[in-house]
Amino acid sequence: MTDHLAEAPEHDIREQAAAHTLAANPLVGVRSEDLVASARLLLGEMLNNPAVAMRQYVALLAEFGRIATGGSALAPDPKDRRFADPAWKHNAAYRALAQSYLAWGNALYRFLDEAKIGDRDAERARFLVSLLVDALAPTNWLAGNPTALKKLVETGGASLLHGYENFVRDVVRNGGMPAQVDTRTFAVGKNLATTPGSVVLRTDVMELIQYRPVTETVHRRPLLIAPPQINKFYVFDLVPDKSIIRYCLDGGLQTFAISWKNPTAAERGFGLDTYVAALGEAVDAMCEITGSEDVNIWGSCSGGITTSAFLAHLAARGEAKVHSATVAVCLLDMAATQNTTAGLFVTPESITAAKHASQLTGVVEGQELARMFAWMRPNDLIWNYWVNNYLLGNAPPAFDVLYWNNDTTRLPAQLHADFLDLIDANPFVNAGRLVVRGTPLDMARVDLDSYVVAGLSDHITPWQGCHNTAKLYGPRSTFVLANSGHIQSLINPPGNPKACFWTSASKTADSQAWLEQAAKQAGSWWPHWLDWIKPRSGELMSAPAELGKENPPVEAAPGRYVLET
Figure (cartoon, rainbow, N blue to C red):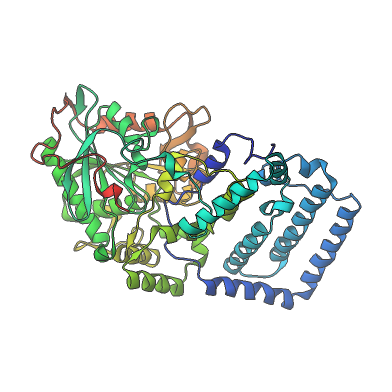
């Protein structure tokens, strides 16, 4: 086999999918009304611009003529793995099929480029066209996929039988969506999230886990890892060689992490205030356990939003409980969300509809969010697996990041509404528009050292928006840009020869100007961060012999909440 899904290493498909994980779910769905409106707009433009439509139609017919006579120069992008099989180049019929597919798709996109449609409407129409073009790719169908046909012949039909079994299994267990991961390989607490530690505080909202030190001496000031409420916390402790938590312990940091309770309708009232209060409880417990007057904190994605709100609340109260902040792949300036695919469909009407839907059920189901997100990136998250699982009859890959990504959580209705309110109010930029536990949110009052991380190819939290996060943290902020995507920039252990990052203070107003003057360094940013955090972690002391002390352990890590479905 020559197709990447059949013969190339399994990491091709799993790494491609890992670039599009669910760590920042679209909180506003793409409503059928919006798609219908975009389709109506597109058809209307074709009727209202007959000259443009006719020009593209004539050009398409001419291209079909060149394809029929072998004179077309159209060819798939060499990076498009769908057309990696040599048959697309060397077989005349398949070459013509690929060229015909490219020709009509290009004609639609050229029409959009030439039609006089407003920018936002044009992007919505382009998204709709991309759904259609991606769905009708010949590689998605058995007769149009030479690799699948070869495997059908070579296996005597067994691949088609296995594909049918996979399809039936996905209909029954996965709501008809192609499975992204073989879940049989992993178990949380057995081969995922295995770093030794104990739950030292359990509330109705979270468990606080203290991890057992691995060095004889540790820094006095502890580190709290505040994960997103969306997805489970063990992305920070996947497997030993990818574990941020183990890396912190190896560096002599007293490390704690929060594991949020997976909410049900009974917790529908959990909102931003609830989670900010939980951070306060965790910090107080850590100070009591370690004897430190304050802590360092790390918040990622939506956990970074919660952490930032918590820090603004402390600043408003004049409380110095946090010494420094690490904020990873997190957008605080909500204007940046307009530059994402999900942001195209954010309107007052869609926000109201999303709030109403979650209020009716009490929660937003993680699987529904995953389905919604998949249709934002269908080639990578749907058709990729459609071919692998059904046409080729392969099992989905066994990959730790994808297992975590599919181990979804629910979002309580109130927090969902609070996050949606951030879009309009943009309170981290506009001081005073949000009250957090009785105090107005004003990022200008937050005065501490911060380390802000972004990913160069992150399409979920674009790095330019994360640069704005660093600016909001003020002149004491260090901005770091990894050469990877959303999750890859976070799970970035040393040892990857392709890894690099740029770093500098975030004083320049423009993100591109920052990049031009930033220093590029080879390797992972983790050692750079450790060198940054250790001087901010206090003096060395003997590692504690016991966990918890005044908060005796109630259960071994990873705790109970992470196992709840």
